[in-house]
Image 1 (tube, rainbow, N blue to C red):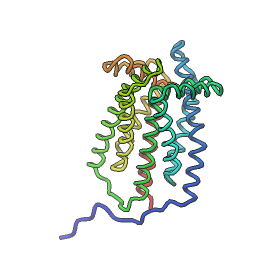
Image 2 (tube, rainbow, N blue to C red):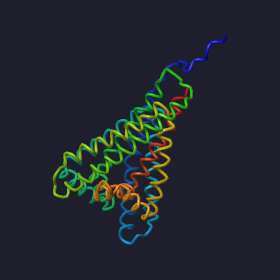
Image 3 (cartoon, rainbow, N blue to C red):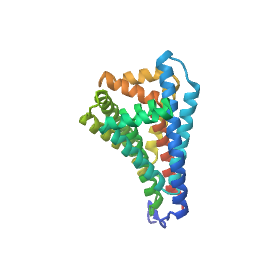
Image 4 (cartoon, rainbow, N blue to C red):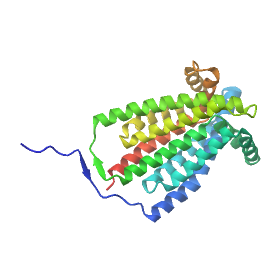
Length: 296
């Protein structure tokens, strides 16, 4: 009678070199602001064109795609080191939190950005007032953590159907509930901000929604299958909504049972490219974590 083959084997912990940390940090510092600028400006152009005459803004869509590509490049740096991605995700999250807690300060920041680019100011204002910056920052933080865990793991786990199923269930539940809370909370925050007030309940909902989305990214530690499926779905649906305004409107109405303003928040998330960018980041996370786990 032969002994059963072990499910896991140990391997030496891969150490991150100083060069890897520097490269990751430099790429993150350069690409993140440029990527966010392209995504915000492109999303603002798409939204304005769609709401003005229902038309298609090709330049805006191209800019949004370029922004997503640059963010994906930043995510890829976590193959070398999670330092750069971790720092920048923390900055994005903190800036987003300050914006939803202190609307006056966010308004001053938007006015400053308006001197640089009206489209940038408009896109940043929408992202901040609806809590999208908080959610993106937390998801990128989850990506950095998952990549680090996979890179430093001392075990190589064999493929498991159960792991894959569990990761899909957790990722779907986390992403769906996270987006629901984010849109519901964002609508409350935005309504309060219009009178220079703060919605405590809205802030709590936004943070909880962001944490659930971060949790969806962290399911990659179990298996990359879950966020790969969820990321692909969000990216495809998000891109369709970005290109075709009618699809964004229908998808926004799907969550209209929560409230009209929640439907508006969902519509803005689709039209400004947030959903497509979120899907792209989750897809990149699945790929990075899988590669880190398999690297020797």
